[in-house]
Image (cartoon, rainbow, N blue to C red; front, top):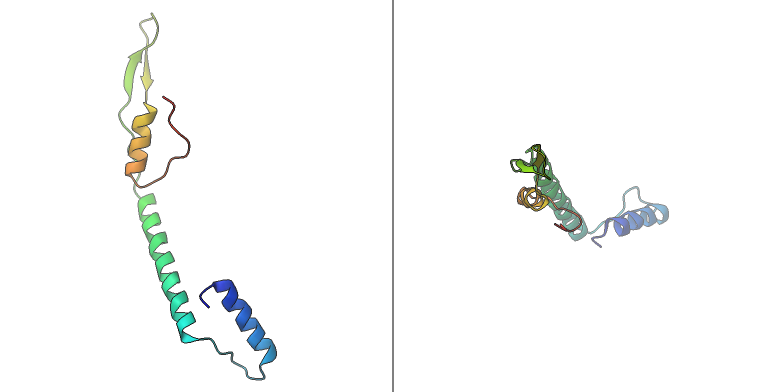
Amino acid sequence: MNNIEELREHCEEMMATSPLRYAYIPASSIITLIERIEKAEAELSAANERLTKPVVLPAATYVRIGYGSTSKRTLYLDEVITVIKAAGFTVEGECRC
């Protein structure tokens, strides 16, 4: 019994049917749940650590578009996606460059 919902239901059943004040929960179930909690806390801590560091985007490139003398500042999507992924984050969708 290492599913949290199953354990909760088991505890409720034991408390409803037992004349005793305390319900019996196997130590192996508690240990398994503690391990899952520790793993989840470690994953959350790692995610929070990634969030403390800003993603540094690539430098903008100035591109002349058309025949005018005006340049436009441009970030290339594939380069932006690369630095976001390198920082440990996921990017939804595909680059259709």
